[in-house]
Length: 309
Ligand SMILES: Cc1cc2nc3c(=O)[nH]c(=O)nc-3n(C[C@H](O)[C@H](O)[C@H](O)COP(=O)(O)OP(=O)(O)OC[C@H]3O[C@@H](n4cnc5c(N)ncnc54)[C@H](O)[C@@H]3O)c2cc1C
Image (cartoon, rainbow, N blue to C red; front, side, top):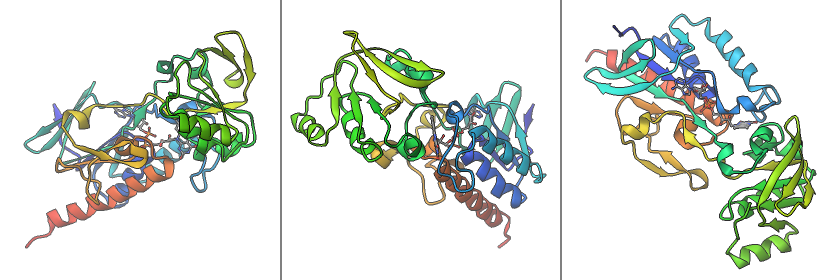
């Protein structure tokens, strides 16, 4: 049987979804949050850069959010995954393994997944979130002035190394068998004292995820204490927006971003896309901002729906 109790269904309970739920709960809008509790940053030991929660484990942010939401009776939180999102006469039908829910409005906040093993560097996945990271603003400070690596494709790693060079003067770019074709780029790396190693990597040596050495195919070992990845082979956690043919535009750093209006409502009326689901990689603070924006926007829409004229 389809449950029609909710005015809003939020798919995903990371910083974006939980922030939307908080604002909706405070507006007494009947809201269902579906969350699988497997956010991409759960691999990391500390989350940084979000005011008042700098340096805590991402699980702690989730636990505090869950605890604080309990106070708002309009919000129901289920540890359950959405497996389908379809449009219906009355809005949307969201299915889960245990049933289905219908609602006029859906907030898509399921985030993204990283597939580090697809980079083909043995040992790299084990270091991800412990000593190698996707974002210098998140983890550059803790790795500052260390021996750093940038692991990535020839098209992106040299450019990323320029940014990482802000945090350390000892940066080596590893393209894992790919040649950097742009001679001017190679020259600029040299001028800025960033070493480029194009040879294939045999494996990374680490201790409990803490990077220690990079072993090249010819057996050479190079000491490194951390690294950054410009490309983590990211995919969306769910393909719902893609299946509904929501158009994308070029976003931050040239990444595709779903087309939404100022309320973060997509081209399908009633479907809002927020956080990493919208932009690919936005960080905790930006996701919270998206959630807050959409919570207020939906409340305003519902007030308008109810106003008699
Ligand atoms: C290694 C690493 C380190 C990072 N460090 C930082 C940092 O220090 N500071 C920072 O600001 N950012 C950091 N980030 C980025 C940050 O994790 C994201 O930008 C942020 O979590 C995005 O929030 P979100 O709510 O949009 O998505 P997420 O946090 O990914 O949350 C999405 C939620 O949706 C759930 N979900 C997925 N599929 C479904 C489904 N089908 N049904 C229901 N629920 C579903 C997931 O389980 C998850 O709980 C880091 C990322 C990584 C990978």
